[in-house]
Image (tube, rainbow, N blue to C red; front, side):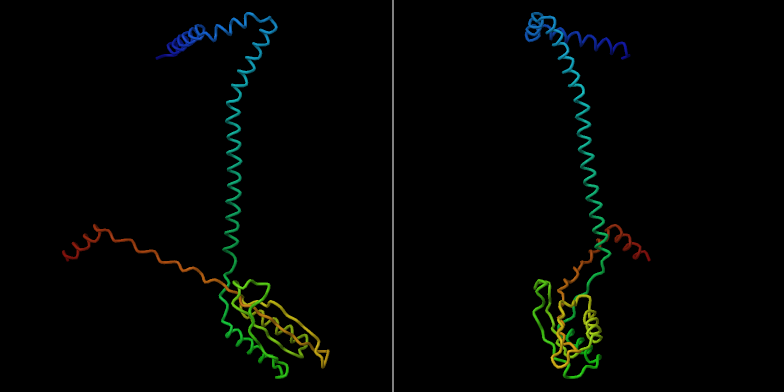
Length: 229
């Protein structure tokens, strides 16, 4: 079918459609109303019809444009969300893992060794006692606490012991430290250190993947080669 045949077919279909429209009662009624209008009203009706047809034609690409704009906006939002998630995941992977806290007995033993290494006098060591943790840390995130009471320390001893206590383990934190001037000699201070062991959850255990079953054909071939040998 060439171009002329297509044009003739479309022309004949258009004429048939136009004839059916002219035979309809609605068209005849509208034509009678149009003929009874004044010339100015007829012009106004024609312009209104042209404007309505133009609006209908333009609404089609506008609908596509509006839908594409919404799709682009949704895509940009999802892309930004994915970027933020990847950034958070990368930052989380770069944070070093915190080891589990030592037991309270191990912490107490480490503290006693540090106090002995500081060469304190017996009257300077008031003792250590276990506590329930700290009010700043929820109980479900704490394994317990330790209170260390020392007396007649100078500023150098206070700083050195505080530094050592705070570096026992990454999961052992110094929650509080209080200093008061010694009653006998105000050049020295009575100090109370409070340590808290954090409850670090154990890393999840990843089960090993089961080995895939051997293919029957491969096993049969191996058995046949063994028999041939």
